[in-house]
Length: 331
View (tube, rainbow, N blue to C red):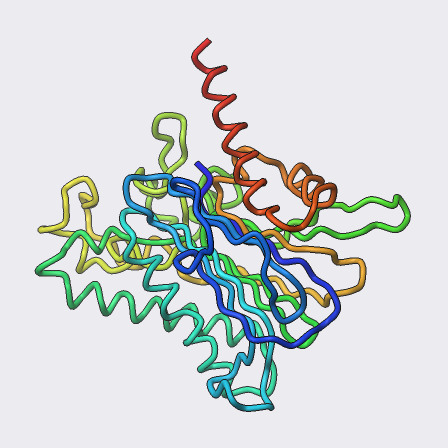
């Protein structure tokens, strides 16, 4: 099911502070929250979030302005930050990321003259460490928080550079105009960490050579330790710290044998790209969208329809395709 999606339209720079999350969405249709059009530091954006479970486990946000710690300062890095946080097991991890990842990024950015992959990596690590500390504090009264986690897809535009960082199986796609064929093509901008990919399974096996069950095919789906599809996340303390893989955690999350090193990783894959005039727009979305729309289908839809409301239309197109597949499966 589609969950979170953010679309950035890249145009000529125009400075304006903007902050937006689905919690402050201007409009809603049932379980769909959306912002049809807004401004960010280097263009416009559209955002849509649809609730897929009984409890909304996902968050998304766009922040545009000074990326340093002091928002009033004229110097230091400036730009746009976009985050899509696809939670699982509960809403606590995605909520925590939405509240703390961007402040952590601003803190580390203030220590350097320019944005960098290292700043983003430090922000991910600090957010993870702080959330694990929260799990530890709540362990005795709320042990199931140890099984809560979130994928985390982040884009930062600063100084003419695009940084895309990802843990989990969300995806960022760039729409780029190719002059030679006069078409807008789709360029995937991140690596996905899902055990359904053979490369991810091979990576896990190389990291855990003594564990023959590090990935298990269960009901035709590859899962890490037979429990979870993603190999990287923020949270999921029960698969990172052995202290949480025991009672009173529910038995279905407990492994039969203790582990010596983290099974899941918080290390983001980071792609850097110098923006050019041919780069038209960016799509940041959770796996729910990409299960039903290809990169090319999403890019074509954006290129051939009005900008206002495009995120909402993409979500609805994916929902319609999901419904069509479900009806076909019943025949």
